[in-house]
Length: 273
Ligand SMILES: Nc1ncnc2c1ncn2[C@@H]1O[C@H](COP(=O)(O)OP(=O)(O)OP(=O)(O)O)[C@@H](O)[C@H]1O
Image (cartoon, rainbow, N blue to C red; front, side, top):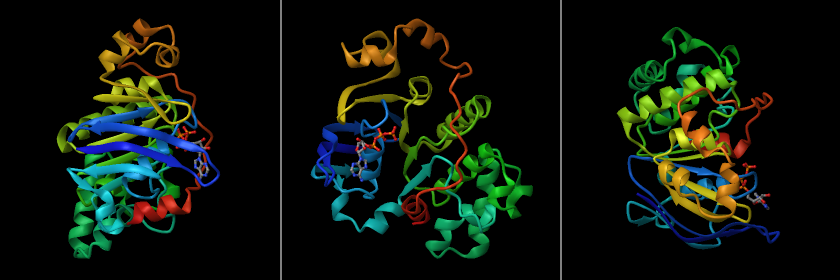
């Protein structure tokens, strides 16, 4: 279980990105952080692997305060998937997926065999193993990103808008395959999205953030739909609760974001650790 206890993040310019967050993410389940732009979702996620340090409060994983662990050791137990995948452009697909096993000093043959196995698990043809990222579609690159995060079998996965940059049809199939995969691997997952439909489809639990980094509601999808908190959450869900529920497993009408192959250097670095 991942536990936030009174966690606040105030950036040096005074912006309060996360405000006194207390939240539990149960083991083996998907907890979705959802909310409008700038409400502190990514900051909350990145505090879990210590890419960002809280100003106040404590985060623990399975009862252990994450500050007591060496940051590199901590990150080895946490897979990280970002929007646009953030793959290393000059490494082949198989070597991208095997990044963490190589860093952990695994035998090269074993690392590559694991990577090939993972390609199959995420629905990629192993014939693509020797290709480079630019030779794959956006959806295939996202699958590689998921496979890379799973390579060292970490108990925890952080996923920051992993399916947002692909078209709605590819997005739906990535979501479906991700749910199938999760039913096998049962990781403890924190998943960020700004899309309430995606949150309802994927989350066992949903944490709705509102502007100012305040947790507005933490509930199961059913509870959220049937008993949304007054005010912000009700507005955020929109007036079509019944419709949303019907659309649960149907194609989502998200607008794809413009392609951008760049990834922040620190994100790539963290994914490499
Ligand atoms: N390094 C920083 N310095 C100052 N303010 C920051 C910094 N990083 C983020 N912020 C601010 O903190 C707030 C929360 O940002 P965060 O990226 O966590 O939001 P988010 O919910 O993930 O947004 P989005 O959906 O747009 O990615 C925003 O107001 C943002 O401008």
